[in-house]
Amino acid sequence: MTHILGPRAARKLQTRQALLDAALALTEDQTLSSVSLREVSRAAGIVPAGFYRHFPDMESLGVALVEQSLGGLRTAIRAVRSGLTESDEIARHSVRVLAREVRAHREQFRFIARERYGGMSRVRQAIREQLRLFSDELAADLLGGDAAAAPVLGRWDAEDVRMLTDLMVDHIMSTAAALLDAPAARPAMERQIRDSASRQLRLIIVGARHWTGIKHDASPIPTTGRKDALTPEE
Amino acid sequence: MTHILGPRAARKLQTRQALLDAALALTEDQTLSSVSLREVSRAAGIVPAGFYRHFPDMESLGVALVEQSLGGLRTAIRAVRSGLTESDEIARHSVRVLAREVRAHREQFRFIARERYGGMSRVRQAIREQLRLFSDELAADLLGGDAAAAPVLGRWDAEDVRMLTDLMVDHIMSTAAALLDAPAARPAMERQIRDSASRQLRLIIVGARHWTGIKHDASPIPTTGRKDALTPEE
Image (cartoon, rainbow over all chains, first blue to last red):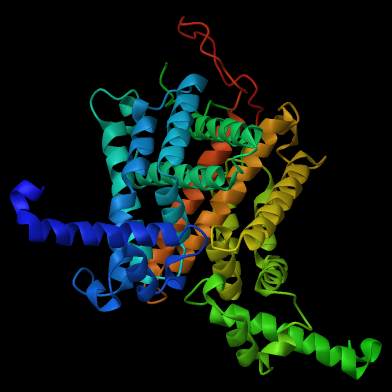
């Protein structure tokens, strides 16, 4: 990057990144709203007044941090794209990829889990928007021509597809948060979280394969026919 | 309570409650870890040194606040107990109860949503323990003699029952957090969240009714028989 930007612009980018890294490190035990601009600047090795050359305020730094922190989550979400097969192995594989990403990007996942419902509304909103984009991408993938899920989801209305991918993204976020809270000293706890999360993901997929859209309770007469007529063969 | 306790003990309890209320009010836009003991004391009308007559530290106050804040959530979780019927109306009813509880106990739900992944580990742990108790209660209810779900869940192994009730509790928490973030000025947004949450709850229930336990991919031969043989009639 130094080649293209020249040394001065490159230094500026480095300082910006140092501020982002410092904020991420400082939010290990607290939320961003508890961290002061002064603390972040000091940790990045600049004077507080220098902060404003990079961000107008702490919320803007938070929004930038959201954008930088979601790479691992995106990879984890992509792992669910294998389609909607009821296979236990595929569910386990998806959760394994998630656990690996959480380990590799621990600080970033922790930041997102905390700030998702944390104090700064612009940061919260940035996370919500990014998760919505992930949900859209997942929907596009599951509906894609070569996806195993396409024949099932192709018949669904748009709200149903969205509720399913939102549920999957929420499930991934909850699982990531549970994994973050498992003490490193207790590997059995992590295994248990992963096992439970795989079962849950598969249960969601089983639900999706047997989903028949909204049913109203207009008729009190017991159903006699099969309800899962839309379920395709595997 | 004054009758039993005497005026002095009653005053002490009142001050304790004033501290809890002040902390809840102060965490409307920030997490508890950003609030100082001094601020809470001032807002409760006592000197900071007086705080220690009620709580040894801010974390202990946080744990007490968790215990006081979960009433609405418990009511919302109870609404899912109607059993595991695939009825759209029942799912909608559960989510309606949740939305009502969130409106009635907004500050408490916000506190729990924030602190669940927030900065103070003892507070986080208290929330985790309470949610686990709720999940246990829900499991006991769904397995209870008169529950519609009992014939289905009675055949499941304990880990499967737990993963289902954990998924339901997580879903309730995510929905509550989404409802809290919907601006009061946009009722259509709340309706959309509720609609999506009811569909998700019903999809989870459909998944549960068609759940057949862990399936391994040992055999690559396509399944020919029905997989949902365990699904009872409605």
